[in-house]
Length: 91
Image (spheres, rainbow, N blue to C red):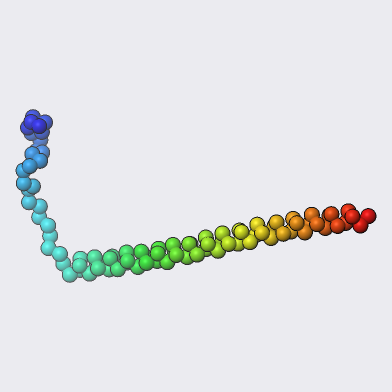
């Protein structure tokens, strides 16, 4: 890799030390705001976990009810078929 790949427009070489950036000192207000945001995030995360648990429970109940409906439908079909057969033999 040659240095000719880097134009002279101010881009430093990849191995050079980065220029110092002035980072402002944290204030009490910024620390409190950050703490509040973290608490809000944790609260929202816990809410999402609760919703996911509830969704899983509802999906399980839905699958059980679908199986029950299928069984009842088969039962009704059998009753109807038997009723038709029984009615046909009485004539």
